Every structure is written in C-alpha cells, then in structure tokens.
Image (cartoon, rainbow, N blue to C red):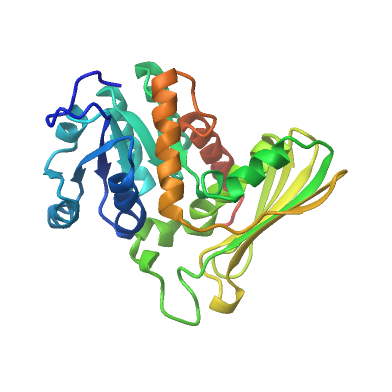
Length: 305
C-alpha cells in the first residue's frame, strides 16, 4: 500500500470504485463512503454520465480514465461484469493497487488465473466479496462449521427471482452477463464459498440443467463428503430463496439468514486492508476466486449448449 498521504493530508488508504450499476449504488458506494478506516476518493465507469452522477452523490472525484484512478488510489473496488473486471484488475495490480473484487472474478479460467497471477506478481492484497463469507451471522456460522469434523453431506440452493417467469424482473435484470451466464455463474460462487471451507476443495463435479436457467451440481469434496447445489436466477417469485444444510457426525446444521449487505462489504474492505498491512494473504482472495472459476467452468462444460 502506498505510504503517501492523499491530497487532503489524510493518512487513511485511498479507495476508488470502478462501476456505476445498481450494485455500486446500493452496496459498494455506501459502504466505501461509510468506512471509517479508508478514504473513498473517486469513481470510474464505462458510462461517464453515470460515473459523474455517482461521484456527485458522494462528493468524490470522477475519473475519465481508470489508469488515472489507479495512480491516485491505494486500493480499488470493482462493481463491474466479470469479464470487464478481470483485465482492469490486472492493470490495477500492476499499478500497485490492492484489489476488492466482485464474484465471479472472471468467467474464463485464463482470465481468473491472470488476476490471481497479477496480484501475486505485484505483491498486492486481494479479497473477493462473497456475501456469505462477510455477512453476519453467516460468516461466523461458516467458521464454526469449518471447525467441525465428520461431515457426510450437504445441500444448498440459491434460487433468485432476477428473471422471474411470473412478475417484474429485479433491478439486476438489466445486466447482460447475468442473462447470458445465469445462476451457475452469478450465485454459484456463493454456494461454493460456503461448501469448500467446510467440506474441502471440490475433487469431482457433475452438472445438469433443469427448467429455466436452473443448474444442479453434484460435488465430491477433499474430505470425502458429497454435496449438491441447485442454482437459478429464473425462479418463480414464490419459489425464490436461499438455504444450505450440512449433515454429519455432529448432527444437522442449517445456515442462518443474514442482512446488512453494505455492512458485509465494509468487513470485506477491512479484510483487504488487513491483508495489505500484514502481508498475510486472505483465504478469500483472488486465488480462491480463480479456483471458483475453475470449478464453475468445469461444470459449464458439461451442460448442453
């Protein structure tokens, strides 16, 4: 992290935001502005007028060039489609910026590995914002279950109504990449982000399609446990919901609900700044993000076109 003070003389690390969509408005920008340990300094977006609007709302600088933002920031937060995020993250790492990434890091293994490699090569910290790993009480629940042994199986479902067949699409329905890639890529990282730390890395994956964009995953883990995940963004509104259940020698454990996503994003930024300060990589960093992309790409390759 740069040791230089920002132009106001504030010693806090300077953080810039890339992206101007609904996620940036609802989560990223409010969390960055409220974070007491950093200074939210500016916004870049692919639509200059949207970037200017968001920058005005938080009284920060609007950048016309992402490289200019990188040059003036210690860390950057991404609220961009994955395959726009990945090459910009590589450039940001080369400029010495720590990376607060969105999931998935990329939708190709090559691009995801490029991000992880750039972070390692340039010695910058990285964290992927995986909601369940930072929101409470889910984050604490995951840590508790990871400390148990004797797991036998798990079942997860993340059924979103972003593109419901029976109602108005959500605010995120205007996202072309979500429409193209579906629940496997948008919510699959969330399910895997819980299953892997508890049950171990995925050693085998098989995937089948269901109705709409439903993808069903059958997974085998390094611990020997088996798990299943059902993923969709096109569920009927009455069927939408999220759940995860673990079963093993110590009983049945059900993941609790969560709220306050901006607060969770603030904790992700805390984790990034801690990794930057200590030099100890966060387990939810770009390397983990690349591993998630590898698993999802293997699953996608098994699905009919």
